Length: 116
Image 1 (spheres, rainbow, N blue to C red):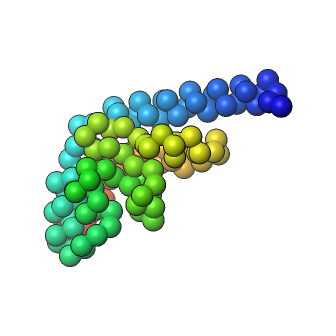
Image 2: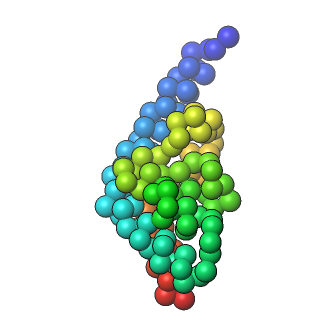
Image 3: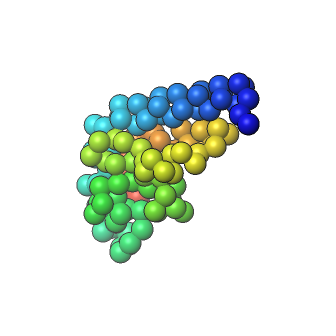
């Protein structure tokens, strides 16, 4: 049986995920730079698969480098998903997740790879 407090926490979690989704979408201009930079970094580093190739070919950025088929950002829309993975995120993971959703940091990472 769900208590009122549990229901309220779930409601707040849903609201927080919606705000995080809005944050991702708001960075679409920066996210749209990622496929081209990922291809460039991929060619320079000689990777044939992985996060950079995935970003270029699928137009999706894996949020966590160790989980290429997990949570992703659609680089065409800025949408975070897939929804079934979002549903499994725990409240305590939201802060860590937010740290990985900064498009400017992703572009900076790729540019560093290209320049090094």
